[in-house]
Length: 70
Image (tube, rainbow, N blue to C red; front, side, top):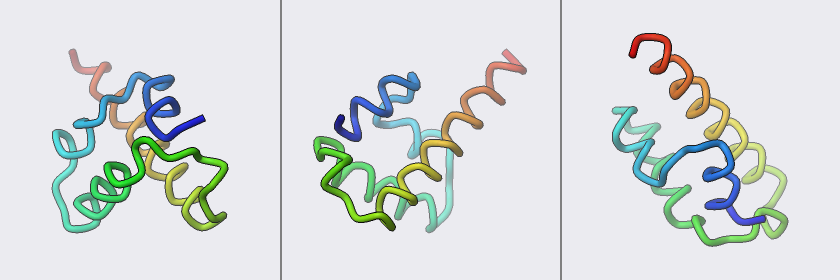
């Protein structure tokens, strides 16, 4: 599975991070996800995979949070 497939499975578009978060940390997250968008997750190091999981979890939480107020 690629990073894009993982994010798409959670209904998170590529531009979601840039559109919903604003800090230097999230700029780094956005760059990491973008640089690895087509990469196979299994080829990542454990540290990269853990960070990707944290980024995705935060994005899903933000997406759900946003739906509560629509």
